[in-house]
Every structure is written in C-alpha cells, then in structure tokens.
Amino acid sequence: MGNNSMEVKEGDVSQPESMDSGIEVCESSSLVAASRGDFRERILTGMRPSGMLHLGHYVGALEKWLELQKQYDCQFLIADYQAFGDHLKEIEMIRNSVIQVALDWLAVGLDPEKTSFVVQSYVPESAELTLLLSMLVPLGRLERNPTLKEEIKKIRGGKGNDGVSVGFYTYPVSQAADILISKADVVPVGDDQLPHIEMTREIARKFNRTYGEVFPVPRALVGRIPRLTGVDGKAKMSKSLGNCIYLSDEDQVVLKKVNKMYTDSTRVHANDPGHVEGNVVFMYLEAFHRDENELADFKKLYTDGKISDGELKRILASDLITFLTPIREKRAYYQQHPEIVRKALKEGSMRAKEEAKETMKEVKDAMQITNY
Ligand code: TRP
Image (cartoon, rainbow, N blue to C red):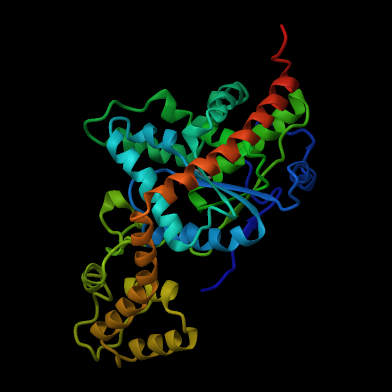
C-alpha cells in the first residue's frame, strides 16, 4: 500500500477567520521533546470509543499510525469523555468499546511498549486544561467549526435524544486540551478533523501570546485515503450506517459483504464493457490489492468486458481475508489475555498523566494561578 500522506504545515490550512494574528512562539518542538528526555517528536491522536474498528479506520488512520510508531514518540488516545458527548446514556457500550478499541489496536500491531495507549478519563488534568482553554475560545469560533456543525445537525436530526449538550458543543476545546497537554508536535487525523486541529493551533498561539510560551503549535498530518466508502457505496464507512467490514469479521461475513457490493449498474452481462470509476469493488481493490500492475490489468479487462463482477469479487474477498486473518487471530489472543490489554491502558495512561501534570504546572505558573 502506498504512503503518500500529506503534512499540513504552517499556513497550509485555510484560516477560518483566525482569532489571532500575532507572531508565533514556541514552534520549535525539538526542545520540548528534549526536555522529555526524548528527541523524537511527539504525536498525539485518538479515537472515540463507540464500537469495534473497521476497514475505514485502518485505511484512514491505523495504517499510518503503525508507521508513525516506529519513528515518533506516540500517544494514542481513547477519548471516552468525548464518547459521552454523543452517547450519553450508553455506558455499557462505551465501557465495552474502550476495550474493543484497545483490542483492535493491539491486533493490527500498535505496540504499547513503544507507544502509549491513553484513556482520556485517566488523565483528568486534561479536563482541567479544557476549562482554562475554553476561556480563550470565542463562542463564534466554535459556531463556525464545520465538523462540529455537521455533527450537531446529525444529533438534532436524530430522534429520542436530549439535544446538543454544552459538553458536546465544546468537545473541540477538550480535544485541543488533549493535544496541547501532551505537547504534541504532530496530530495525524482524517480530513474531517482538520478544523479541530486548526482551532488547536489558534488556541496554542493565543495562550503562548497571552501568558507566555508553554505549547508547541502542532501540525496536522492527513492520511492516504482519508475516507473509505462503505460497502453500500453510498457514504463513508460508519457503524451507524451499517456499511462496515470490521477488522474482526469472520471470512464468511467478509464474503457476504463483498458479494453484496455494488459494481456497475449499467453492466448487465459479464461481457458488457464495465466502468471502474465509482465502482465500489474497485475502490476496495485500490486500497487492498497489493499488486498494482495486476490491478491495472483488472481495470483494463473490466473496461473491455473481459472479467466478470463475480470474478472480481472473488479476488477482492480473497485480498480482504488474507489481510484480516492475522489481525483476527491476534485479536483473539489478546481477548484471551485481558490482563495485557488492561496493563497497556493503565501504564500508557499513567505515563501520559505524569507529563500532563508537568504541563499543568507550567500552565498554572504562566497564568499565575498559584499561591494567592
Ligand atoms: N475527535 C476524534 C474523532 O472523532 C477523536 C479524538 C479525540 C482525537 N481526541 C483526539 C483525534 C485528539 C486527534 C487528537 O475521530
């Protein structure tokens, strides 16, 4: 699989009416890393625990994280507080998902010895920082965040909920606190998260300018295929749409899902010329077929009406099963050893907490919230 991710550097992200325009300080992150006794840059990224992870998570995030863990000092966050924002009453689901997410991370090969798995609620210092940072964010700035707007629209459109809570409304500030408290230099995310990272950068600059240099201004890193279309071909893969192939799916389930995929509705007979563009099976082959030359041949054969939908689906199913089998086996191993999972969460979180305490001390010193 390819590896052409794009780093979003200073000025690359369009600045939606930035709330600051001053000079920047503390962009030099290597000094911060050195003060941790580690010269690698810090990465922080995370996921909301709201179910098991699927191929969309792999392609959009995990594949990149696996590479990053080799060269960066990484913290991977399971944002359980954030999950409460849109699943207020689903306590069991969230509890279970924290473990499921950790299992999926371990199964794909994230290594809790090299990196830190962090449970958001185990680092309450970040909640305290959220409060302080929220003072720096004009309400109108949140109101213009396109990702937040989208999510709010969905919540309002849904039935049987309590509307949008203040906590949900301000989750981008909490996310900024998670990022800044770890003094992250780089935040790998899907493109839908870019507004949050842009806001985080603005908050960091504003804090540094107002109270003194504390935070590096982090940059976003966007993945190769930021969104994988669901098996229905209609929208991005997501649990709520029921169009997922999960990392833990059994072979038979994968086969069934692949067989139901849309291909080319204009193609009635196997020898009709087919269309590759917009064809779900090809989207997946693009992401998971290892041999690029072969894939080019498939496209040609398909366009010429020389390969059937069925044949193509058999190839894709086999690609996916080959990819998923070792992941599922590893997952099963960790499922039988829950103590390893719990240890990873606990130790990673404690490492993050120690650093978060340090950062909070600097924050409070800078703001002179001390010794009244
Ligand atoms: N909001 C992110 C999502 O829904 C998850 C997340 C929480 C996150 N905290 C983060 C991402 C910090 C990057 C950095 O996918």
